[in-house]
Image 1 (cartoon, rainbow, N blue to C red):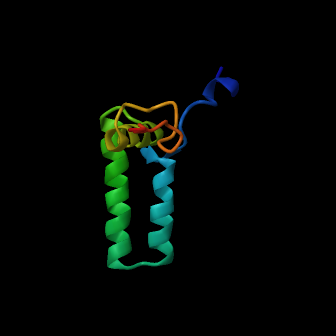
Image 2 (image 1 turned 45 degrees about the vertical axis):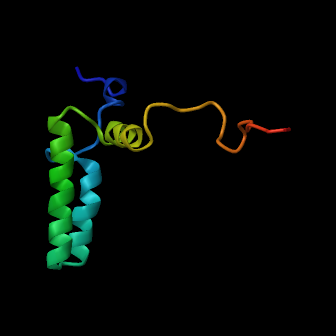
Length: 88
């Protein structure tokens, strides 16, 4: 017996891909051009590659943020930090 509450954390799927790639497919279906086809295929390929690495879309965004900004996150903003003052 498959209970509903046990499946609430499963990601939404569109066939074998993450359901977010359906927006690109929908864009292609509404505006069928070569560039929208390339965009949809590249988005589907990106989601597939992320799943092959064992990452979800959210974890990939967090990894990208850590790669861009670095792992050191100060507690205070840059403007709130005290500066050196020379009274001499």
